[in-house]
Image 1: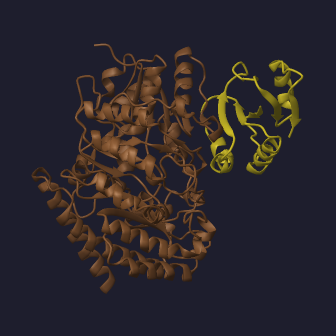
Image 2 (image 1 turned 180 degrees about the vertical axis):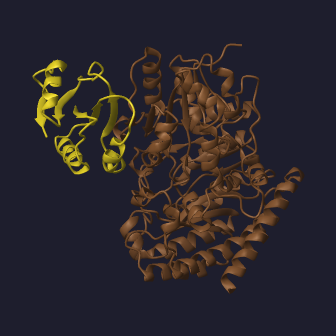
Image 3 (image 1 turned 90 degrees about the horizontal axis):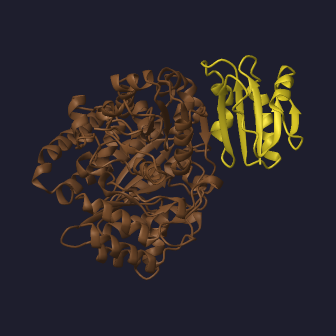
Length: 495
Length: 106
């Protein structure tokens, strides 16, 4: 059996399909709560099925892109499960690692650190992987280690691990083109840069983005890269906007279906802006896209939509209701999606995300949020919404405005998660999570969001989620977790 | 167009000085800035000094190289070369810089 010269991998919390329920993946960003860690990991990150070569059945989409780019460039490369890399050490020249939260410094992991003062399981699992015998052996053999992905910035705060684990290169930015250059340098024995930032001007053009060759976790496929809204707290907005063609999308759908994956997620910063270069959804590209996807997938979810686009779409020819008619059928009776509320204060919103409400004025932000979430409720679209606490310039009035908005959202099926804005400078201190202070008003907001989510989580679990019999044990454990959390929050707030 | 910054690992300039270099290069509209750290391998204290640049940079490409000698310095497309100390002048001579590259001592 001959091995691969380039291994693309990550740790267990990423190389998993979370039992086919992407939302369970959020549990990997927290420490085990109310359950033993082994059980927590079993729910959040079950081990992936692999073949004889250690190739996982499904792998994170970003890793699949790097794999495709390297294969297209003529390298013998494959995504390999972290438990199986030792099978390829005799032939390996480079190990490429991706992650969305290496050291649990990004949201929502950072929030869990702050609240529990305990390290989330994703960071623990990644450290275990990097300290594993196989990784140590790889370094001994002179295999080059390249790390990248959306959490690459975290290495700048983890210099000691960078040195200890002998990471050769940290890559920040879109990886497809640069991965090929680095692989060439490794094969030629040329030195590698310690750090590399790929600017937006060097990001791959649409024609340079390869399509995946093997299945992605939970059938996730990208439909658009970049975002036009320019929010200050988000880096995606720096990327040029590129919409995949329907032909590219179909190729990726076929790959997933070929390997038995018939439930999928459409990935974009704003699915409803597919096919447009402004912020007003258009029915033709959306209907074509969803009709195509439903030809292959029994069920689909959206990764993200903006609330302004939901409202604009419904007002512009009832696009949401009509999309629902395409999506909902005998296989599917709800659709999940992440949305960003971030704040209920128009004043703060105008400072940090002035274009988030477009095509509507930012002064109308709370109304837009309420209307969009009610439209989603009527169409069985379940939003998992985020609120950001502690944004620069936030005042008590801003937090009160968000509390008031939460009251108005009560009747609508939604999960609302609060996240802390952690300024970068905080990471200078190794125990940064002990230093962040949570104000009483923030606590009140967190408790309100918790009760809102706990109420609707049970409704969602009962009506929509995990209906199949084989989910019963997981559902049972999730119910234990919800009840445990409710008891904890109740006792903490009545003390 | 790119800018090259040659630095000795021993006697690294302060973050403020590095930021000035970076800002100067940005003002000259370079598309990339490459920091070459010359010295023995190991010891990554320079990351802390460079961190404010690396975290706040958005538009231009940035590379950081750790090299024991000058053989691998890529001068192609370079229009600016920043050197941080007099000791590096000798190194510049060895690099055989084309005259099209403007040398800036900082």
